Image 1 (spheres, helix red, strand yellow):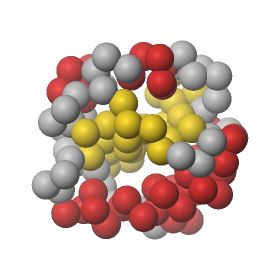
Image 2: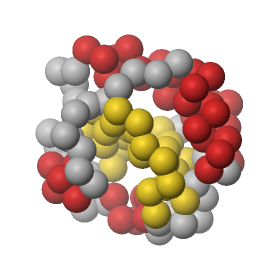
Image 3: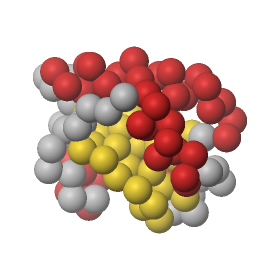
Image 4: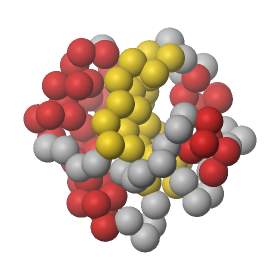
Amino acid sequence: MSDIVNATDATFETEVLKSGSPVLVDFSATWCGPCKKLEPVVHEIAAEYGSRLKVVKVDVDSAPGTAARFGVLSVPTLLLFREGQVRDQYVGVLSKKALADKVDKVL
């Protein structure tokens, strides 16, 4: 399950909240420089964790309701969900190791 899924306001509940596995959600925007810097890190995490972690990308401009629901005021924002609940979050760019450490705590 190393592919990154794009979620919208309409699909977020199914893709994230009802997922049977832990989910890393990357809230970002196409115009966001730091989001572009974080993108390769998120892709590496998706590839390395495979079926143990679902990775979902949410464009805040395309899914403003979901961004508002989870209080996303800055991008990039990463939320880690397990069993439909936010277990951890981070705002800004972080290293692959730092993100992997956060993911490991949720798995």
